[in-house]
Structures are given as structure tokens and as C-alpha cells.
Amino acid sequence: MNTKIIKIDENNIDTSLIDEGANIIKSGGIVAFPTETVYGLGANGLDEEAVKNIYKAKGRPSDNPLILHISTIEQLYPLVDEIPDLAYTCMEKFWPGPLTIIFKKSEIIPNIITAGLDTVAIRMPDHPIASMLISKAKVPIAAPSANLSGKPSPTKGSHVVEDMMGKIEMIIDGGGTGVGLESTVLDLSTETPTILRPGGITLEDLRKVIHNVVQDRSITNKEEVPKSPGQKYRHYAPNAEMILYTGDVEKIIKKINSDAKYLMDEGKNVGIMATEETKDSYTVGKILVSGSREKSETIAHNLFDILRKFDEYNVDIILAEGIGFDNIGMAIMNRMVKAASGKVIKL
Ligand code: AMP
Ligand code: MG
Figure 1 (cartoon, helix red, strand yellow):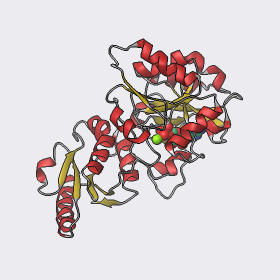
Figure 2 (cartoon, rainbow, N blue to C red):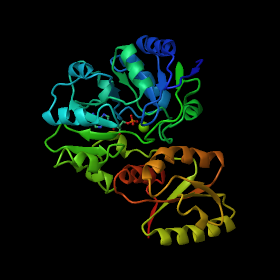
Figure 3 (cartoon, rainbow, N blue to C red):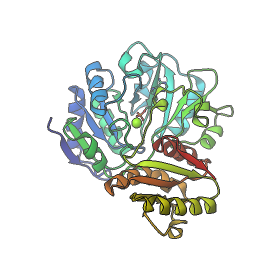
Figure 4 (cartoon, rainbow, N blue to C red):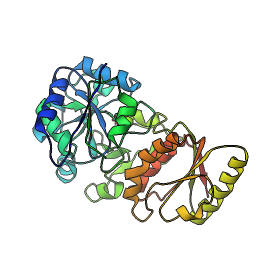
């Protein structure tokens, strides 16, 4: 397939290009587009054949349901069976934005979207290109992250080109995404409001409006089976092996330095994922800075790009500094633990 790549400036959108993308979606094709979280791989969420092609392009397991993206509240009503009061509160406070809400689904949702579940995940993205594309397509857009299944999610147009060239009709390159991590998935279809995946809207943010919100136990305990099907897969993984170091920063630096030396003596090409505050403490290896510990949003923003960069440098192993689990740190560490396939050294 010939993939058309178009560049759009989010501050000066050429609407005729968005029309072109919307027409592809209306006729059953796939368009990758930027959102404020990561790039999405979009198709008409009510067209079963089109959605099948999303799974195919990504190589995504069919038991991993998709999120439907809307641009107005009116679009929500036909998609869900019930809207709890709490959902109205959350939508008012956090939409448009990086919060996906799980609702009881209506009859019109194809089974392929929900992987057979009786609930559906819905989000209203906060990105001018995404909103315009959805409103011009006039359908809810199913859009998982626009990476090959298992790879780090794309946060730049070039990442999408790497993974999706020749597999989809169009890639809209709108530059870098904002948050850099996927949305928070919040289940409001059951008795207790539960975060199924940590993301751009933090537990602390949600607690301000939902006092009894909890996190699915699988987020902090890997022995638990996740309630959200997608959370059970190895994810976000670079080609290189990765080891994550958590705990006291001074101890992390010491241990990474000594492990790096040992691995290099063994002939390994070692990458170190450092932070602004610690980068000068490392003396060997390919050192890349993920962001600042003081401003962890910067780490969220850069994480997936840095993971892809280590692969470009052909490192064999990445020794990565972990950060604290508070605020956006919870979502960052969730992605890092998965990228490391659970290989975590606690110090
Ligand atoms: P992605 O679009 O690749 O960022 O992944 C979407 C995430 O939402 C995955 O972790 C899915 O398992 C989760 N998800 C989608 N629909 C549902 C649902 N109905 N119930 C629980 N989790 C869902
Ligand atoms: Mg994904």
C-alpha cells in the first residue's frame, strides 16, 4: 500500500488536508494522527472491516479492545448504555484530555472494538488536529497507539513512519505530542471507580473529584491479573534488553556505573537512561537524558522517543534510572517496568 505522509502545523491547520484524512476514514481506510498523548491509528469505529485492519496493521492481539475517540459530548450518547453522574463530573473536569472512561456499551458498538466485553472505552482528545479529524469524519474514531504491537508508542511523526509505512493509507505528521504517555483508563462501569491504566491524568488529579477512586491492583503488584486486557501484554519494549533501577538515587548511580563497567568488559554496548540531575555522574556507556526529576512531565514527554533512540544506537542493554511513583511518576514507571519486562532492581 502507498502511504501518503502529510505535514500539518497544529497552529495553522490546512483544513483541506484534514478533509482528505476524514474522507479516507469515511471510506474505511486508516489514518494515523497526533493527539496530546501519543499518535493514534484511526479508523471508523463503527465499521467492523476498517477496525479489523487496525488490528492487522499493528499486529495487535484481538483480545485487546480499542478506545473510541469523539470530539463532542453529543457523540457519546449513542455509544453507551448508561452515563453515571460521576462520568459527567469527570468529563466536565478532564475532557477534552488524557482520560479514557469505560462505560457500559450500547448495541451499536461492534464486538471487535470491545474484544467481546460489554463495556466500551471512550475519550475526547485535546488536540486541534485530532478534534478536527473526528468532527469532519463524523464518526467515532477507533484509535490505538500507532506503533507496531509491543513497540514503544509513537510520540513523533517519524516514529509512526518507522512502524506503519506501507500498512495504512495516510500519516498526518503534526510534530511532537504533548503528554507523551497514553491516556489514563478509568472504569466507571462498576461499583468502585477504578484506574485500569495510569496515564496523563494522575491518581492525585482524580482523587480531587472522586474520593473513593482506586487503582487496579495489577498496576502495583505484578502477581495480579489486570482487569484491562491490554495491560497484560509486554509493551513499550525497545529491541535492547532493559534493566530498571529504583530506590535511592545515589545507590542507583553507583550500581548503574558498576554494572555498566562490568557489561562493557563483557563486550556489551551499554546504554544508560539518566536524568538531567544525574547525567554527569555517569562515566561510561551511551548516556541519554530522559528529562528532569524535578519536572517529571519532561520524562513522560521524552520516554518513548528515548527508548527508540537507544535502538538507533544499537545498544545491547539499557540501564535505566527509575523515578518516584507519585503523580505522573506512576504512569512513567508503569511503562518503564513493562519496557524492562519486569527486570527491576530495587535499591
Ligand atoms: P491503546 O489504545 O493501545 O493505548 O490501548 C487501549 C487500552 O485501553 C488497553 O490497555 C485496553 O485494554 C484498554 N481498554 C479498551 N477498552 C477497554 C474496556 N472495555 N475495558 C477495559 N479496558 C479497556
Ligand atoms: Mg498501545
